[in-house]
Amino acid sequence: MNIRAAERFRIAIAAAATLLPLPLPLPLPAATAPACGPVCAQWVLDEGSGGNLDALLDTALAGYRPPRPRRERQPPPTLEGLEQAEMERSLGPLNDRPAREELRRELQRLLHAPTRLSISLQGNDVLLAQPPEAPRRLSPGVPHARVDSWGTARISTALRDGRLTVTERYDRGRQYTQTYAVARKDGRLVVTQEVRRPGLKPLRLQTTYHQDLVSVSR
Image (cartoon, rainbow, N blue to C red):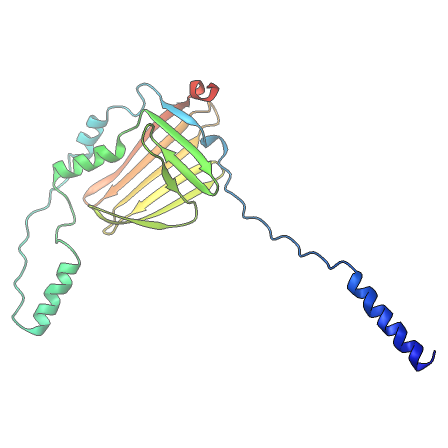
């Protein structure tokens, strides 16, 4: 093969290569949505479930010691004293325990069992609602924060093996946990609420729900 023929052959090979289809990029694996399982449904509170909340709170608050008023010391009129006073103000009030009636109202609000529950999955988010109220959007594995009258709550959500757990942690040992799981023996939804507050023994309440088949059939 002379030089001119070799050059023609090289050009022909290069032209043929441009006509070959290019390899397509492999698709990226899609994010896997959490498996909701049987916990995602419409639920109705079982009659008599949860017992007497007022009696439970009476027992829990029997040994509770309300906070005693404490006097704040006047800082010395120096730059160091003013800085210390500013730091103490930024930490909030000295009392870390609410008055008895204030704590009782908070516990009643937290532990009140709604008549209906709706749990559903939208994309990677869990929608938790107490109809007819708007749903609360929770993102499993994605922590977030909420500021309310009790301070800043660090909220975490987990959805594993059909069990939904929502934990709210405040400062000074305050914590509120809700767990939603379906019992294997009868298919009822068991809602477990646990409350931890300074000066109070851990409080635990369970309520059960049956599936709202009427809403499902509509």
